[in-house]
Length: 306
Image 1 (tube, rainbow, N blue to C red):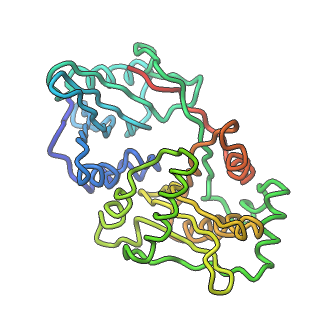
Image 2 (image 1 turned 45 degrees about the vertical axis):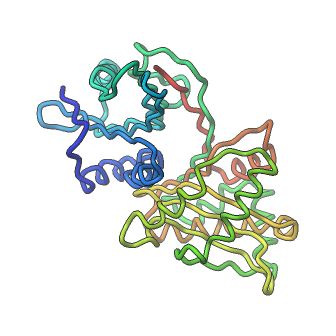
């Protein structure tokens, strides 16, 4: 079993990531965008007898000259199903060859549901897992509509019959800047965390065709912007990342209409999995209900292991 920490090819990385509908945090563009912001990023490919077993992207947090921790979030991406024993050997190989100096730690928060530990058994869990809502949009539109919870569907019908118009927002910085300004404002007001605001500009421009990286939809009532949602596209999956609504947009269920239009467009682009983002039924109960009532599957990850 050999671990390659450099010499990776974008096309090969993309192929394995797309095949598994991998998470945003394991996408090549995610790492590249963070690198441009000065965040150290490591990429590894684990190969056995010439065949790739797994690939993993790590974000590095340094402690001055003392050492660092490399965090693999929602990875590794497995190239094929492995036994628990084989997965454990992959984790061991990654940890042993980690190319960091001084005191070094490897932390993994894998894309594994709680209770399905697989090859994590030799590692120690240090943090409980987050919950998110995963929506399979590869099924037909009628099937997607049928699985909507009745109150969510009623809100959508109401929004569809309103005078709101949904528009696609362009990928030039000036066209979506207002949404990120609102995102920054609501983070301060609600004490929320998230990716650095400059990250989005980097991500949009990380490929030759920015429209393939991002989808931003805006709802207007007359000449007024009343709501918007931004989705980051990564391979055959997408993640809901930024959302804003005015009081009027909230009253008219603008986000219900925007999300439904986004689902339709993402399906046309070949996207088969939509990650609606984390859910917290205590701190943000309303947002959690909005996501869960789409009919998506609530997945609680196994947690962080070292």
